[in-house]
Length: 70
Image (tube, rainbow, N blue to C red; front, top):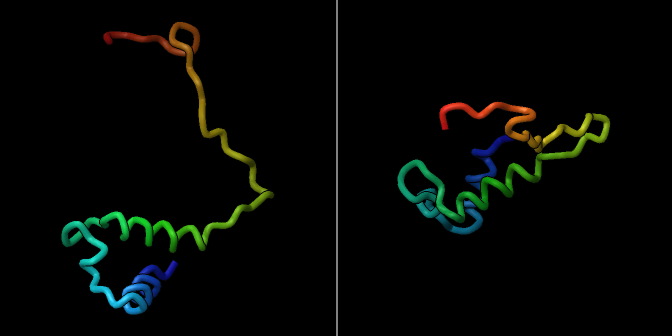
């Protein structure tokens, strides 16, 4: 993803300086996080030919795992 180009276009379109999307000189603020998520999400596509990963797995202490020393 050409993030740099898309960020620059957003800043220009809205008349903003880069610092308007930052909490400091590095970290994104709420609007910056929204923009990052928006840009990335436009490039994500589902591929139905890939298997669905198991995203949650439950373990029962005493049956599946042992609990030691707290």
